[in-house]
Every structure is written in structure tokens, then in C-alpha cells.
Image (cartoon, rainbow, N blue to C red; front, side, top):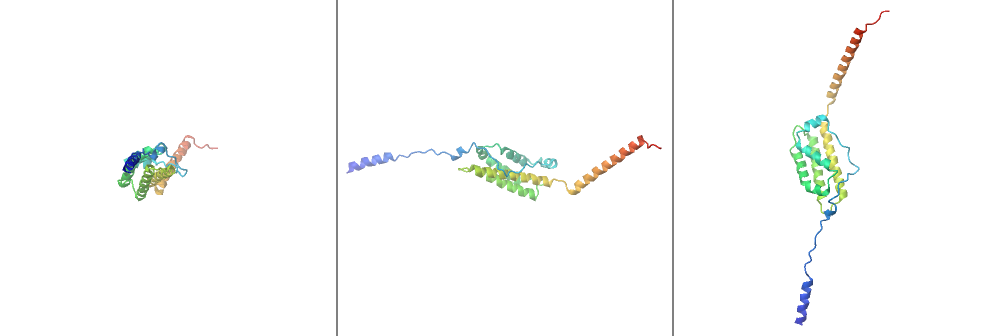
Length: 194
């Protein structure tokens, strides 16, 4: 009986070798995909010349602008690799803004933008990437940045009083010019007597 059990155990042990399976990262299937913006995309807000001049010194804003521009062409693998940097810059923009630039409304938009940055990077970094959700988060990220730019424009827009003052100055200069032109014409062409 012993002789039967020993060979049986040897056969059993050799057949139970550890088979090493190579794990395939499921993200490899989505790494080369680019982000497709959804239809809810807001129109791009262009900063006014005054706003552009005021935020020239804000380095984090320049970097955020570059990240948003890259959103159309970036592949998911690159978004995952650069994600920590994106989060860091968005966090710095939120924590260390220039006091002359940021008011409470802009600070609020920076907080939302930071949250959207985190969410986008987290969705792109998941093991099983849901590309539809990444596209949705990318669209929200873009829209949050447009809201930030709109708020910056609102901070630096001219007040009603300033606009009225400019209008009054322009009207006065046109009136003076018209009066001068009329006086010159009258002096060069005196009225005829009948």
C-alpha cells in the first residue's frame, strides 16, 4: 500500500506546480485614447486686455492655461503621468494666489477648478478606465476653467461710472471737434449777402 501512495503523492505534487500568470494592465487598452469633449462645452472666454495685464505675474495661471489647451490632444497615459503635476499647480493656484488678483468669487472658482483637476486625474488613473466618465470630467474641468476666466474678467471690468465718464469725455471731444470744424468752415466761406 505504501508503494502505491508514494508514487501517487509524487504525481500529485508535480502536477500542482505554481503557474505564473502574467498580469496585463487593463489600462493598456485605453492609454492611447484622447479625450473627447462633450457637447456641454462652454465657449472659450477670452480675457480682456486689462485682465490679461493684471494676471501677467500669476505663473500658476499660465500653467493652468497650458493644461487646459493640452486637454484636446493629451492621451490618457500622459494625463496619468502628468496628473500629479496638474494637481500640484492647481493646488498652488488655490492656496497661494496673488492678493491683488483674487477676490472671494475667484477663490471659489479656484477651489472648484482644483476639485475638477483631482477628479479628472483620479478617473484617468483608475485600473479600469471608464472613458465616458473621463470625457465628462474633462468637459467639467474645461468649463470650470472658463468660469474662472469669466470671474477674472468680471473683476477687472469697468464700472458704469467709468464707462459714463469715458462716454462723456468722448462726446465732449466730438462736440469740440464739430464746433471747431464748423467755425473753420464759416471763416473760410463767409455767408453771401443777397
